[in-house]
Image: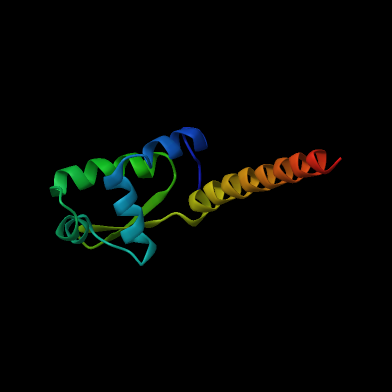
Length: 106
């Protein structure tokens, strides 16, 4: 399920936080529990939980129950939405650059 609740602009804003970026980087290599993330990050388990809550709200992270724990993973649809935005940005940037270069050649 993917619903980017707050939109992609809020996702970029959320990723401006280095801890959230570190969490996303960790989750890129597979599912993790809050405890596993806290073991490799310089923040407490409650802090990791709060960051995961934000990432989940914006649709970048999802979770599933495994016994009494929750395992977190990247939400492929959320990541794809950001990737699509980046692709569009670079397409537009390169098109504009090409147009500038062609105008310079004239």
